[in-house]
Amino acid sequence: MIDKENGIPYYRQLMQIIEHQVASGGLREGQQLPSILEFGSTYRINRHTVRQAVDELCRQGLLFKVRGRGTFVANHPLNLLEYKLTARNRFHQTIAQAGKMPGSKILQAMELIAPEEVATALNLAPGEKVYLLEILRLVNDQPFLLSTNYLPAKHLPGFMNHLCHFSSLFAIYEQHYGISPQRVKATFRATFPRQPEAVTLKIPANMPVLKVESLLKSQDDILIQYTISCYHGDLSKISVEWQESDDAGGVIRQER
Amino acid sequence: MIDKENGIPYYRQLMQIIEHQVASGGLREGQQLPSILEFGSTYRINRHTVRQAVDELCRQGLLFKVRGRGTFVANHPLNLLEYKLTARNRFHQTIAQAGKMPGSKILQAMELIAPEEVATALNLAPGEKVYLLEILRLVNDQPFLLSTNYLPAKHLPGFMNHLCHFSSLFAIYEQHYGISPQRVKATFRATFPRQPEAVTLKIPANMPVLKVESLLKSQDDILIQYTISCYHGDLSKISVEWQESDDAGGVIRQER
DNA sequence: ATCGATTTGTCCGTATGTATT
DNA sequence: AAATACATACGGACAAATCGA
Image (tube, rainbow over all chains, first blue to last red; front, side, top):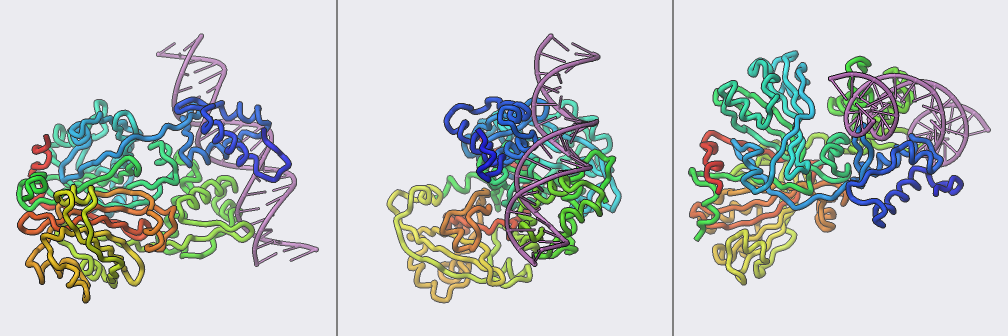
C-alpha cells in the first residue's frame, strides 16, 4: 500500500510495488495489468499519478501499453540476429535465408511535403511532396526494426494504391515502376530510441538502438527512397561485406 | 508555431520546434531555455503539455533540468562526425580529410594465444599466436574510438618492433610486409560500453556505443586483422557506400 | 456490421511542495 | 524574505483504439 506521509512520491512507490510483483512472479510475461483507473481506485491515487508510474516502467522496458487494450508485462527478447546489409538485399528474403520468419506491418502511410532534411537527402526542391511510410518489420513475430521511409511522389505516382497486399517495397518498385533499386549509402549510429520507437519495438527507452540511415536509387541514378531504420539494439547486429571480385562469402571460407 | 488542427500532438510539435532550434544554433550548449511557463504562454499551450515535451527531450539527452533553476541545453557534441568506412580507408587519412586532427595512442601491445572467437574469425588453428594491440584513436584530442586489434603472428613476424613510431597500422603493413590490406566485412552493433571502455573513452557507462567488428585481409586473401572498435556513440556516425561494382546481386544469389 | 463499454492518449485547470537565486 | 522554476498530485474533458455483445 502507498504511504502518503513518508515523502516518497506516490508514483515511485507504485513503481516499486509493480516491479516487485513482476519480480516475484505475481505478474507474468505478457499478462495484463489492472487498468490505470483500477490501480487508481485500489491504491487511492489519481490516474495521472498511476500513469506516471506506468509510463516510467514502460520506458524501462518492464511493461508495455496498447491503446484501447491495456497494460501488459513485457517479455524479454531472444537471440542475436545478424542482418546482412548489401546494395540490394530485401528484408523478407534476408530473414528467410537466415531461417527465421519475417513479417511486416505498415503503421502509417501518408503524403506530405518533404521536411527539410528529407528534401536535402533526396535532392528535392523545397515544397515537393513525398510519401511517408512507417513500417514495422518483425522476425518470428517479434519487433525487429522500425523504418520510416520517404519516397519522392513525383517519381512514384500513385504509390499508395499498391500497398494493399504489401510485403516488400522492392517488389512494388519492380512490378509497378520497373525500378530495380539499389542502396547507395548507409549510415550507422548508436543512440537511444525516441519514446514511440521504444514503444513500438517494445524495448526500454534506456536501451541503445542502432539507427541506420539508408539512401536508395534506381538504375537511372534517381534517388527513390530515404529511410531511417531503428534496430532493436539487443536483438540485432548488422554486417556489411566488401568484395573486389564477384565472389562474396567465398573469400572468407576459402582462406588458406 | 503550433498547429492545433493537424492532429499531431502539441507536445510532439513543441519537441520538433526545440530540436530544430538547438540544431540550427538558435539555442546553444548550456544555454538556458525559457521557463516552462514562458513556453506555455508563447505557444499558447498548457505547462503540462510543455513539460511533456521537455521531459521527453531530457530523456533523449538533448536538454537537462535543474530544479529551482531552469532548463538547459545539454552539453552534447553537436557536430557529430561522420566516419566513412570503406574497404581501404585509414583512420588518420579519413579524419584529416574531414578537416579534423587525428591522433593515436597505443594503450597495450602483447603477444598471446588466440582466444577462441579470435581464432575462429581469423581462421587460425587452436593454440596459434596473435598480437593484441589496443589503440585509442583521438579526434581533435578527444577520444573517438577504442580498438582492440588481433593480428596473426605467423603472417606478421616481429610486428612489435615496428610500433615505436606508430601512426598507422596500414603504414606498417605496407612498409614492412608489402601488404596492402582490405576490409572484408564489418558488423555493427549498438550496446553499452564495458567499464574500461567507458573510462578510456570518457563517457558515462549508460551512454550507448557503436561496436564495429572488422575483418581485414591482404591482397593474397590472407586474413591479417580482426578488430573490435568501440565508437563514442554520441560523437560518431559511420557510413558505408556502395558502388556499381558491388551490386551484381551476387551476394543474394550465392546465399545457401 | 454496429454500437457501447473499456482503456489508453492528450490537454487544460488548479493547488501545493521544494529548491535555487 | 521574496520571486522564480521545477516536481508532484488531483480534477474534468474529450479523442482514439480495442473488443465484445
